[in-house]
Image (cartoon, rainbow over all chains, first blue to last red; front, side, top):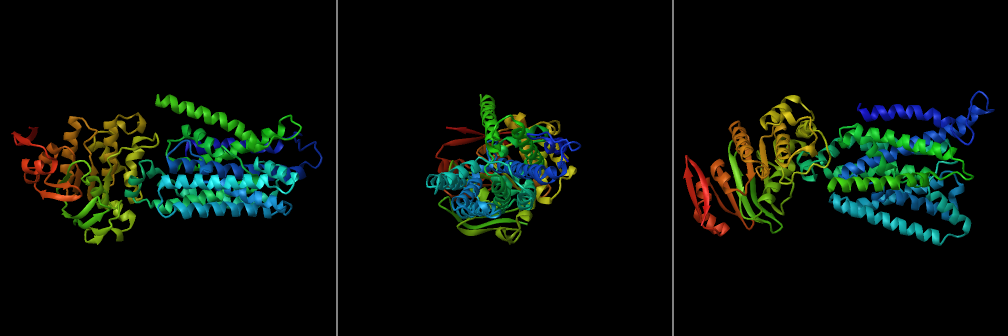
Length: 317
Length: 242
C-alpha cells in the first residue's frame, strides 16, 4: 500500500462521519428528533454516492492520464460523459424522469453508445492519436445533440430541468442510485486497476510497451470498459461533475512514485474525498438555493487547471 | 536459435528483405537516411507487420508466439528515449522484467551495475541527462535477460567513454550467447565492433557481409555516394572522407 492510499484512505475515513453530520442543519444525533432516520435515508446514501461517484471519476482520470501520457487528460476526452449526459437529456426531454430507473438507464445507454462508437472508430488500430480524436468527435457530437435537445425542449419546465440536471448534483439522491452506481463503478475501478502495469509500460512509449508484451489493443478495450463503467455510472446518478478526473491525479502524484499503476487506487480515494467534501460544503453554504455540485467543482477546477498550465509553462521555460 | 526474415515487403519501405541472424555475434544494420534501418528493426521485433514474407524466431513464426513469450526472448531499445512520467530509475529498469512477471532484484541489479548506473537508481528519470537516460533505458533491456538484443542507435546519446563501455557490454552479451542487432549510423563503430554488417539502401539489402567487405570504400561510394578512405591504427579503423 503506497503513501497516497494511506493518506487519502485515512482522510476519507475522517471526512465521512463529518459529512453525515454536515448540512443546513448540523445533525446532533442526541438531540435532533428522527436523527437516525435522517442519517439512514438521506445523509448516508448521499455521502456514499459522493464516495462512489468521486472514486470512479478519480480512478478514471488517473487511468486516462496514464494512457495518454498527458497530465492534462481528463475522462471527458473520451466522450463517454457527454454520451451519458445525452442519454439522460433524452429521458428528461420525453418526460421519463418521473420514473426512478429510466433516467439513469437512459444515461447508461448513452454512455454505452459513446463507448461503442469510440470502439468502432478507434478500436481496430488501437492508436492513441486516433483514439483521442475519436473521443473528441464523440464528445462534440453528443454535446451538439444535447444542445439541440435543449433548444427544442417541449416546454420551459423541461428545459430548466435539463439544464439543472446537466450541472450535476447529489441532491435528493437515495439508496436506489447507490445500488445502481456502486457495482458498475466497482467493476470499472477494478478493470482500471488491472490495467495499471500496462500503463506503467506505456511510460516508455507505445512501441516499448508492445515490445514488453503489452497488448495495446486489449488495453484499449479494458480502458474503454473501465472508464465507460465508472464515468457512465457517475453521470447516470449525479449528472456532469467535471474536473475531478483532471485534478485528483495531481493531488495524488506527490505522494507516490509517479508510476501510473500506483495512482489508480489513491486517485479513487482522493476523488471520493474531493466529491464528498465538496458536496458537504455546498450543503452548508449560506445560500437560499443549494449550489450545484457540478458548478462548485468547476469553480474549483478551472483555476486549478489554469495553475497547472502556468506551472507547466514555467517548467518548459 | 536464429532470427530470420524471409522476403519481407513492407509498404514501399522494405522490399524482399531476407536475412538470417545468428546468436553469439553483433550484427550492425547500416545505411543512408531513409534506407529502412529502423523499419527493419521494428519488423524483426514484431512491432510492424510485413505486407508479405515472415519473421521466424527459433523456427517459429513471430506472429504465432504469445506477446509475453516474444518479449522474453527479444529486448528492444528504440531510437527515441521517451519517459513520460518522472518515475524512479530503478522502476524503469524493473520494467524489463515485465515479460517474466517479476521484479527480481538479481537481474535488475546486474543491469544497473553493467551500465554503471547503480548510483542513479534512486534518482528520478526527468533529472537525468540524455546520456544517463540512454544508459537507464538500455539497462531496462538487459534486465529482461533476452536472448536477442535489438537496439536502434544505442550509441547516439553517449559520450566517448560510455560508447566504448557499451560496445564492450554488447560484445560480452554476444560472447554469452545473445544475438545482438544494432542500427548504427556511425560506420566506424560498425567497422570496429560488428561481426557482420547489413547495408540497406532504398529498402533493400545492398551488402550483407563482414565489416571489411560490406563497408569497403567501393561499397560506401555505391550506397552513400561518398569517397572515403579507411585508416588503420593498432587494428582499429578510422574513416576519412575525401
